[in-house]
Length: 165
Image: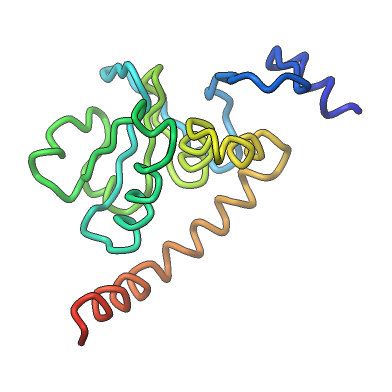
């Protein structure tokens, strides 16, 4: 299959093995959602999320309970104490979109951030690798941008249900 041989050649993968493989996350895509950090270094991936959003908090809580999550730092950017170490990430920007900084310090947002997060969690690793297929990241980013438009409505509904109003 050409896709398997391309992946092996480009990323040094043997897709027949079931071992953990860490792939570099530095290629650019059409959505331009990757920014190379110059002042931030991380020993492990860092997820930046809006903890004031009930939907976001629920999703992050789900991921935190999964195998592999102990190797990820989760930062609630709505919490002033946690917001102090964002590096080159603006707090307003962090509140608007999902961001993940990889261990090399490269910042990824939107769909690229999710693909990176999923590659860190064994149960979702297969989903994370879909981002390497041609066009998948761009398509996922389009859906993510549509979701961002309805996120406030979904969050408001979740808040009402939580308070019983």
